[in-house]
Image (tube, one colour):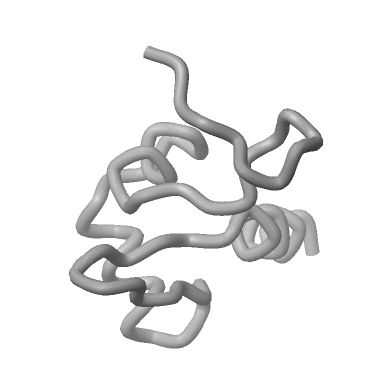
Length: 65
């Protein structure tokens, strides 16, 4: 399924929780725990919680340290 890419660059800027979890190979509950701990940034838009791609990249970069 193709999702719209509103920034015009062809890349997504944020993912829903389930998409973010699948993208980095973690469970939804682990993502929610990371959000609650302040380790992973997310934004709430209406009733939907989104995880910016930059936050996922920062989380993965932290794992390298």
